[in-house]
Length: 314
Image 1 (cartoon, rainbow, N blue to C red):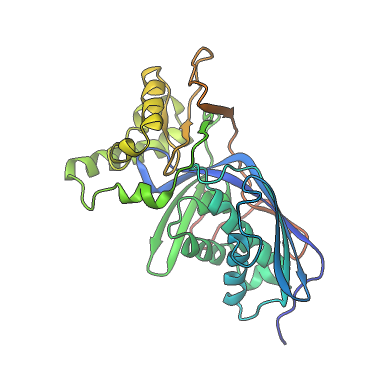
Image 2: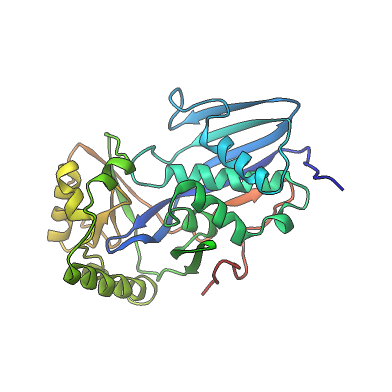
């Protein structure tokens, strides 16, 4: 029997994410309570995307849109594509700011495709969805928390990406400081050296291990746990305002880091009420999104997940 696509509209809510979290370069990520809302339905032909909010008038509105590309890649996993797709995006996650906008689009596309396939959850389980999304993105640190929610530890094996989801402690209080200017992951990665001193690698290994404990059990340790020597210092010259804000927040005792590749700054502990980042920055207090990419309609109707075959919940 051939593959069947459902006729109703499928929708998905995908959370913003912050990756690295200081020392957890390309491995640690946190889902935040700021969401893009996407919907899709199968049509008789063509690929059309409507974008409202962030990126409207700038993002592609055809098959070049990242959501469509992720959907087609997912459909190719089961060997069939629908004749056409109509996708609507209501974007709230700032584009190119280090808050996982591309991962939200990719995970959203993967989830929409799963929902539009009859029996899609059996054909493409959560473990496979993670592998597909990470392969498109190039690394799993943002797509894992976007898909699974909460705090995630992700890694890559020969068979693809894997992740575990952990529950952050009550004292984790994310605040984002978002600047007006864009940041681009490719240029931020280009600033990184091919090798780092062994003592810096050892320093980060210890801090990343401590951060896992601090985020899940003892937020009082978040300040030392968010120290980093692998990437933030090397990127500072390319985004001096971001580096200065991180330094100012940490001087005030706040566990602050560069969010992803920047230029957004993430604070994981409470920011003093009299702290003034300057007019250049828009700040917003967010929560931790525990559910991940939530899908409604089609063949996917779940927000709570059991163990993920690519890893396991903890």
